[in-house]
Every structure is written in C-alpha cells, then in structure tokens.
Length: 292
Image 1 (cartoon, one colour):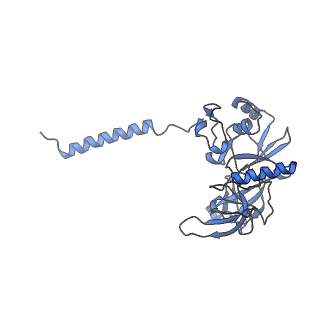
Image 2 (cartoon, rainbow, N blue to C red):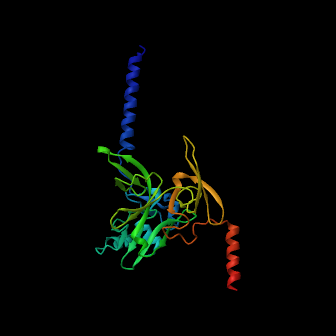
Image 3 (cartoon, rainbow, N blue to C red):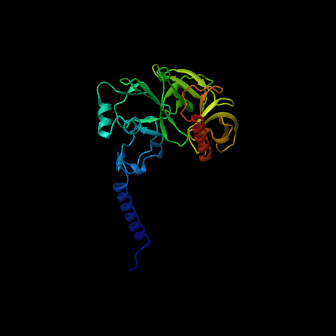
C-alpha cells in the first residue's frame, strides 16, 4: 500500500529535526575559543612560523583580535623581557604591578593592546606607544614621560542614550557622556590618562596631519587634502605625505594626529613615509657617501 503524502511529510520533519539536533550538539554552544596557532595569528604580530605551534590568544578587551596584540607577545617578541610565555605570565602576575597599559596595572597575559595604547614599565622607567609601521606591523615607539600622560583616540560613534543623554564611543571602547557638541564621528580626542577627561579634540578636516590605520597605506603619515563624498558608499580622503606623494583611502582609515603639520605624538622612525625598493637603495647609498 503506497505511503500517503502526510506520512512522508512527517518522516521528513523527523529527519530534519534530528539533523538540527545534531547540529546543536556538535557545532553550537561549545564555548569561547582559548587557543591560537601561530599560523593563524595576525601578520601584524610578526611571529616566526618556526618558533612553535601555539601562541597567546588575546582576551576579550577594548580592541578587536585582528587589531590588537597580547601583552605576552609584547614581552617576548617586542621587548625581549621573557623567553617563554610562562616567564611573561610571572612578570605580569608580580604584586608590584610591573606593566601598566594606559595608566592601569594589567596582569592578564592575553590582555589586548591596540593602537595608541601607552605601555609603562615603572621599574625601568620606560614608556612606549603602540603604533603601526608602513608594513602594517605593530611597533613600540619609545616616548618621554610627559608624552606618556596622554593618548589619542578616535570617535567611532555618536548617539543619544536613555533620558536623552548624549554620548560618544571611541576606538578603544571608551564611552564619554555629555561630550562637546562640536565633537563628531572621525574626530580625534586627546585623553588625559590619569583623569580620563578630554583635554583637546582635533577635527578631521583638510590641512591637518593624519595617520593611516588600515588599508594598503597603513602606517603612512600625511596632510589631508580633501574629502570625496560618495552617497551609499565610503567617503574617500586624499592625503599628501612630506615627500609629495599623493594617495587616498577610506575615511574609516584616517586618524588625525595633529593640527596643521605639527604632530601631538612621536612618529615612528620612518616618519610614516613609504619608500619603494629603489628609493631605499638610493637613500642607503646616499648615507654611505656621507659617511665617507
């Protein structure tokens, strides 16, 4: 006797229900990932693929995984204060509070350190600012104690919360209530790390010095020329560096670091200038001639 269409539908429903249950048991609800292999780590960390299989996975924090680097990796591969992850954990776990990020003691070896964060080591009296070089790699720029008292952040959101309270959100997950009405998205704030208050703000406008934080031109520094508005798409900002080279990028990649040509922070050793292989060779030959 042929099977009715209703019974076939019931069988298909039971099969699909079992498949969905199997999906829930095997794929979903497995908890957060706690491990990371070196081969999957961001290229901005500059980790050797032959240095082992595993590396420290960044914890949850103010920066995204692909836009941050854990403290353990900084102590091992950038500052060379530890040979192994266990040594870096011991340094961070010390009761003296050896490592501070933005003026606060951090003991988590996976704490995500991102762009413009200030790392302070009291015992050695060293301070560093986290930046990108023109290759898109994380670097630590040594800064003076006066400069370590503040940091620059970019405004990513501007909204009105409950009870009509205006607030802004920055790239390092800060929420600032009742900001200056003249502050808008893509502007830069100068934050005093001790008090957490806004000392100064910079507008994203032509003539100001900017730093590229994403895209193919990451790490480059130049003056904003003009902005192209594209409705329904990304606005494009045209920039000119100190060598006279012109390039353009999305407005999301622009980080204003100075009013006019003067920068509020110390720039990397390459001053944010991208040089081709031929230009690097010519500069090297010129230095050798000057030494002679």
